[in-house]
Structures are given as structure tokens and as C-alpha cells.
Amino acid sequence: MKRMLYHAGRFMCAAFLLAGALTACSDDDTTPDGPVTPPDDATALATPVLASQNITQTGFKVTWTAIPDAAVYAYSIDAAEGDEPEYTLETSVAFSGLEAGSTHVVRVQAVPASTDTDFKASEFAEITVTTLAADPTFFTFELNWRQPTGAGVKCTPADDQTTYCFINATKDGLEFKEIDEYISDYMANNFWYGPGDWQPNGWDLFQGADEYTEYVNLEPATDYVLIAVAVDINGTILKHGTFEYSTTAIEKSDCTFAVEMGDISYNLVHYVVTPSDQNVLYTVDVCPVSEYEGMNDDEIVAAIMKKTYLQYYHGTQKDNNIPLTEQDTDYGIYIVGCVQQQPTTALSKTTFHSGKQDFDFAGEAYTEIELIYVAEASADWATGLVKLAIQCTPNEATKVYRTICGPASAYEGMSDEEIGKLIEKEQDESQWHPSDIWSFDADRRVPLNGEGMVITLSRDASGKSGRLNKYKFTATPMGENPYPDDGDGPILGSK
Image 1 (cartoon, rainbow, N blue to C red):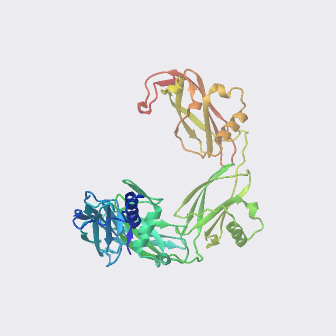
Image 2 (cartoon, rainbow, N blue to C red):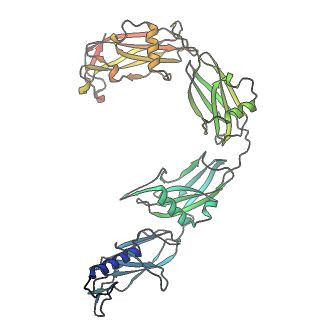
Image 3 (cartoon, rainbow, N blue to C red):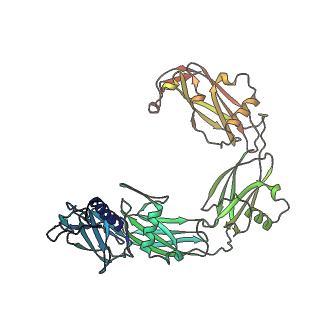
């Protein structure tokens, strides 16, 4: 099957002929309508000199020299006797959608304007071009895994320099088109093209061995064909390889889910899910146990499957931090394997109790504060302000701590409870973190030679608050900046 990607068409030539005829006519003119037939002694235009380039398995380009006095160029590919040619204003034409290893004859003729009686069309120039032969061994494939809605296929090209992309098609979809035509149409509709710029529309390019992976977008029990397409820098198709595979039907799995609990506070829970089979899709619902009170496992699974916000997970582990909406409440982590909202595994349940937010500050949680440095900000907009870095070290009882910093005057007259609520209002979903150095934004900076304050609020695993640590300092000049590459000014001391 042939597909001309670049031509003006015979209608353009007809437009030229019509324009010439109208120009020649007037009320007193006896010139007949239609194109003028050149006299026998008219000079034939020079015959174009043809050359081929960009030859691939599925197409090629033919170019020719520009011919003086030519208005258009007639061309054909594998034309039979009596076939009408196509026309173009350009000096090249590209063909695609051809069979690999097929041979084609292209003919090109220079054609003068219809009103030009000094010249007549040139002789046809002819060139024979053969597309590249198919190379079924260039790409090798290996099926790594599969499940009802996805698969993983490793693809290895014959060399590491080849750039390629993946196209995944249903086998039924390919029954209506030759694969070369399917690739050409797919790339024309799904890839961005521009002058000297080409990239796949939402698809990655690969070099060397890589894996095509899809988890949730395939149909169960369906035959697929994975196509690896080698391309050049302009997106021209060079060659391709194919691999047939099938997704599995939706079946029950004996996959189990291990849950490792992490930190639990009044508004956040951290846990890690490890499935026994990394290719099983599953969903997780974290909610108060009262939501499923009185239900058996089958009823709970049915209720989960009806939820519209289901998210699917897969892989060896899933690290989760989930916000909690209710304090001092029994919660459940409900996990079930599922495909297209059809359960495939037994229900896994893990319960925990959310913490309670209090501002008694009577707990054992406590976080030490160490001022590392205070540096004068060098940017014009920050003149007269300082930037500071502190190191926070929580004790063993601390599971969550939050930090606030700013001019000391900002916290004058505030009670501990007011400060605690301010800290958690600004950092309500922060996770606990290890000892580290923190640098604060401009609105938290302390005026040069002014007083600043760093405050930490610490909570234990149950959410109980320990006493606040208030670290007050005064910024005074001293020494050189120990971190000269960060763009700040001289180091400042503190009292």
C-alpha cells in the first residue's frame, strides 16, 4: 500500500491551467478556452536529475534539480499505463507505507505553465528505489511478567545507539491494516513534528535494553502486539520489530499483604505495604473501623469496590503517609487485590489507634535545638535581614516534631498553647524528620542585630505533646561565612 505524504495534487496543476486560460481570454480574443498546445518547435524543458534519500523499511524520498521555466512537476510511483500523475511545486516528494524490501519506480517530469508557448514538458526522468529489507532479528523480546491489565516486556536492540519507541496494539486492531501502515498512521496522529524537532506525544524514547511496562490500561484476556520502532532524530521510521503476547484473565490470587506500621499521630499515619506478588494490582482504604462495623470480609470488599476514588498500586513495596481526619479513633487499613473493581485476593486488615492532639506539654517528647550559623542575606530585597540554619535533635520519645522560627517579637505575649496551635496550623501535614539543617524563607528571617527565636513542638507516638523548646538568640557580626558558596554574606554570631 502506498501513501504520498507530500504532494500538491493534480488539482493544483488544474488550477495553473485554468489561471492561464483565463489570462489569455478577453471579449475580443479568439484564443480558445483551455491550455495552449505548444507548437512542435517549442523547446522541451530540461529533464530533472533524480536522487533518492532517507530510505527506510517503509519509505523513501526522491529529490531532483530545479528546472528553469518549470511551473510544476508531475510525478508517479509504480504507475500503470493510463494512470494520471500527481503534481507538486516542490523539488522533492516522500513516499511511506511501503513494504520492507520492495522495489519501486518513480518518474518525474518538468511541466511549463499552461500559457507558455515557448516550452513544452520535459522527458520523464526515472529512478528505481528499493526499501530496506526487514530485519526480524534486530529487536529481541522477552516477556518478564503479565497480569490481567498489564505486562512487562524487555526489548533489546542489536546496538545500543539505536533510538526507538514502543507502540502497543491489540492484535484485532492490526487485522485491518498492514503493520507498516499502522505504524505510519499511529506516529502521524500521536507524535509532534516540527522543523528539525520531533518527539513522541506522551511516549518515551529508549536506547539500549529497556522494558515496556503497563499495569492498568490493558484489557484482560486480550491478545496484543508490542511494536518497537527505530527512528532517527527527525522521527523517520527506520525499522521495527514485533512481539505478540496475551494478558491473563481475571482470576483469584493467593497474594497476601504484609503491613509494617510506622509513626502514628493525631493527623497522620505512616505505613509500608509489601505484597507477596509484586505484579498483583491492589487498592487500599484507610478509614475508621466504624465505617465497616458489623460487616464480614466479603461485605467490606464489596463496599470498597463501590468507592469511586480507588487508586491501584503495584510493586515490591508501597510507602504511604495518609492524613487522618479523626483523633483518638480506631482506624483500619483494608487492602484487597482487584482488577477493574473486581476483587482478586482475600481481604487484609490491620488496625491502629490515631493519636490525640493536646497542648498540655506534659509528655516526654522533646527536641534539642542547636544554632549552626546565622548569615546576612546578600540579596537586595533582603538587605538588613539574616538567614539561619539550625539542627534539631529529637529524643527517643519524640515521633513527630514541628519547628517555627522568626523575629522574637512575633511571639511576644503568646501563650504556649497559642504558639503550639500556630506551629501546627502552619505545618499541619508535616512528617517527622531526623536531625538536619534547616534554612528559613524570607518571611521567617530575623533582622540584622535583632532578636530571633526558634521553637519546636514535639509529640510522642500517641500524639501527646512535650514541653516547647524556645531558643532565643541575638544576631551579631563575627568571622567569615563557613559556607561561602551559598551566596550569603559574612557569618554572624549569636548570644
